[in-house]
Image 1: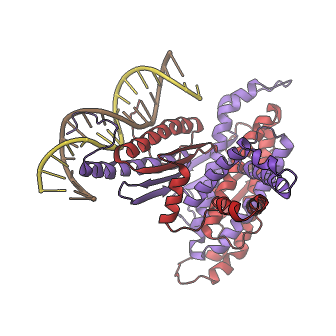
Image 2: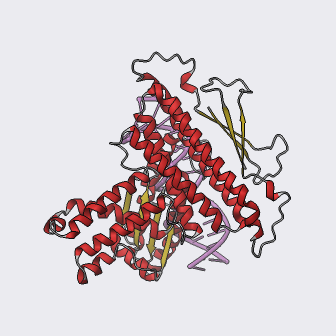
Image 3: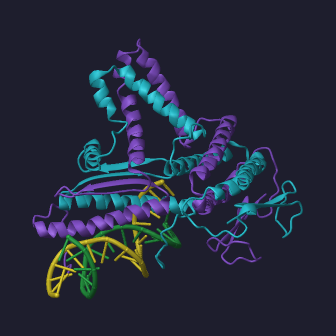
Length: 225
Length: 225
DNA sequence: ACCCCTATGTATAAGCA
DNA sequence: TTGCTTATACATAGGGG
C-alpha cells in the first residue's frame, strides 16, 4: 500500500513506470474532462507515452483549440495548417512536396546533418529524440537476438557507446581552451580548466573487485561528473 | 466544508465556478507536470477559461507536441482517406505522397517506433545512424552553448545517457530469465543468472577519492562488461 | 481574485489475484 | 496486462479573511 509519498522524478523501473503512467494518465484525463464540464472551459490535452503511444482529449475539437491557442500566442503558422490554405490556391502535389521537404530536413537533422541554424533548445530536443530512439532500438535488438548471442552483442553495443563518449570527450578537451577563450560576459572561475575532462574513462584490464562474470577480460568504467 | 461530492455538471454560480476553476486548473497542471516527469511522457495541455483566458503547459515545446500529434493523426487520415491520393495517382503528387510515407516511416523508426518487422541488421544500421547523429548533435550543442554553461549542460546530457543505460539495464534484468528460458540449442550454464546485471550502476553520494571537481555531489560509475 | 483552513472525497502506490 | 484492494497521500468544497 502507499506507505510513502513518491518523489516526483523519472521512475527508473520500467514496469512501475508503465503502471503509474496508466493510472495517472486516466486520472489526468478524468480531471481534464471534469474541469471542462464544471467550468465550461475549452481544453485540449495531448499525451505521448515514453513508448510513443498517443492519447488525447479535447472538449471541442483538437484543431479548434490548437487554432485558438495559436491565435492567442500569436504564434507562427503551424506547419499542419497550410494544407488548408494550400488546398485553396495550390495543387495537392505542392502540399506533398512541402511535406517531403519537411521530413527530409528532419531526417537529416536526426542524422546529425544540417544542424547549423539550430538553437540550444532545438538541439536538446533532437538529442532527447535520438536518446529515446536508440533506447528502443537497443531493446528491440536484444529481442530479436538469440539469447546465446545476447550478451556479446550487448557488450559490443555498449563498447560503441563508450567509444562515442570518449570521442566526444576527446573533442571537448581539444576545444576546451578555445571555448574558454570566447567566454562572453561571464566571469567563471575555473582552476585547471584547460586540462580537465568532462568524461573520465579508465580502462583496467584486470577485474579489481571480483566481478561475477568476465566476458572478454576488460572492465570499463565511465565516470560521469 | 465538503459534506457532499459535487455533481459533474456546469456550475451555475459564476463566482463558485471561477473559484473551482482556479483550484482545479492548478491541480490539473500539477498532475500533468508530474506525469510528464514521472513517466517521461511528452505532454501538451491547453486550457481556456470560460472568460477566454489562456493557460497552457507543455513538457517540451507546444509546437513540437502539436506537430507530433498532427503527424500521428495525419497518418490516420491518409490511411483512412486514400480517395484523395487515388484521384491523383497519375500525377506527381502520388509520387510525392509515397515519398512522404517513406520518410515518415524512417522518421518513426529513428524515433524508435514501428520497429517490429525489422531484422537484426536493420536494427544495427538504425543504431549506428542514431549514434552518429547523437554524436554530431552533442558536438554542435557544445558549440552553441556558452563556455560557462558548457559543463553543466554536458553533465546533464551525460546523466540522461546514464538514465538510458540504467533503463536498458533494468529491462535486461527483467527479461534475463525469460531470454534464458527461450535459449535454443544452447546449454548455457548460469549460476545466478536471474539477478545478474549486464550493466552495473553504482551511485554513491559522497566522493570517495578526492575528485578534482564536484559538480553536484554525485559520482556515478557505469561498469560495462 | 487569492490565501488559509479543515473535513471530506478522490487518486493512487503497492500488493495480490 | 488488467483489475481489485487497502492504506495513505493528495485534492478540493465550502467558508472566512
